[in-house]
Length: 327
Image (cartoon, rainbow, N blue to C red; front, side, top):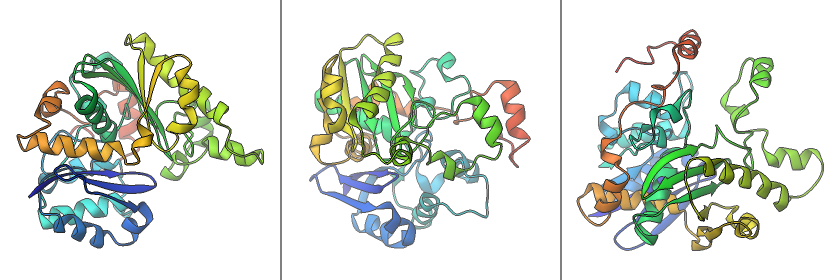
């Protein structure tokens, strides 16, 4: 029996086995086309405890124990006629009763003060918490730093103080990523009116470059990354920035001009999957337990919609068909 971590990314799914270091990466399009094959593969690993597949995050529980409300909070998909790729994988994991646990997102953690969560949903999804777990396990438990995850879709920035996550800018609530526009000017949101998931994955720097018939510009990309890093200087005193994701190499030089920049992208594997395996091992009571305790993962509570102000929540209730606080 093994402990495994699973990262469900925009471009690919990654699986890491903690005990022997086996690593697998599968195109997200292939998982979406045949989720049954992916879940059969997970089953073949003979998992004692797995962690991941949690979307926007959920306090720790077995995936086969999550209910419909939990699933909506994890996927933020309120249209029952739409089957999202990860949702189908989750449904199959539930059917097989695989021992895979959900992982909370930044917003679920009690180490993040409530006032920093106001009208936020995405302060860093579960995989960002997993990446922080990797850093603490590999580089030291009591560090203060910022993690900058620079993926195909989104850029996210997580602030860690003495081994605890205290704030975060999520991929959809911060600065533009490669394919995603991230946070939206409120006036633009008003003009757009009907905003769907397709838009969330559009309008990033990739579109900017294509509109101008130019190739990838590392200086422009790095400028936005530096904005994300510096914004968290208001919260945490840090000198070290850990860079991960497919664009880590492109920004390393610029970030190194001001910080001790550690390029995790050179590891060649998704550190979020490795971190998820550390969390899974910790859940099993093995190596990784100290990281689990430092991040206070097992005491995470609530949902991603718990921190909306009453006036914003009222507008939301007018647009979705179930009680957002029915738990």
